[in-house]
Each structure stands twice: as C-alpha cells, then as structure tokens.
Length: 105
Image 1: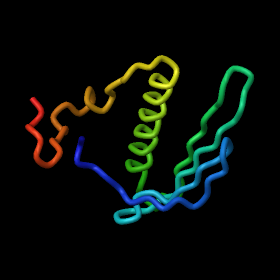
Image 2: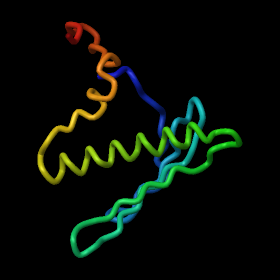
Image 3: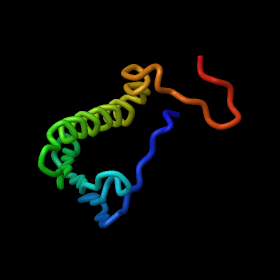
C-alpha cells in the first residue's frame, strides 16, 4: 500500500504476555518488545524500542511516534470496528499501487 517494508526477526512470543523482535534488520536494527498487562478494564499494552545508538534521538522519537500511531489505530479498530486511516491521512501522497493495479487517485 505504501511501498514500505522492514525485516524483522521474532525472538520470543509468550501468548497473552509478551512479543520480542529485532526490528529493521537491514538498515539499523533495534529491539522492540510488546508487553501485555491485564487490567480489570481491559489490557494495557506497553511498547519498548531499545538499542538506539549515539545521536539517534530523531530516530527514537520517530519510532515512538510510529508505534504510538499504530497502537492507537489498533485500539480504534479493535474496540469500535473503525478503520482509522491514520497513515493515509498523514501521508496522502505516499500511497503506491500494487503491481498491475491502477494508480490511486
């Protein structure tokens, strides 16, 4: 949809508890951990992205914003069945067509 992809290596999956991956293996790998904390009113999801190098402040901030956006979109979709279109709304000109499909317009 946007012509963007990254390589990920799954390191651990503990159902209902944790997912741990190495993220962005080709370009600048970091580790991402999702932990799920049960609460009486639902589940609290915490995402930690670690392993940034010296001078990677902008990348860390961009990563935090990206994961927050995806998590917010997932919450809206799971709880209300609404497709939030956050990426499309934020980057309307970045959409690409799949091979053989008509260009978006």
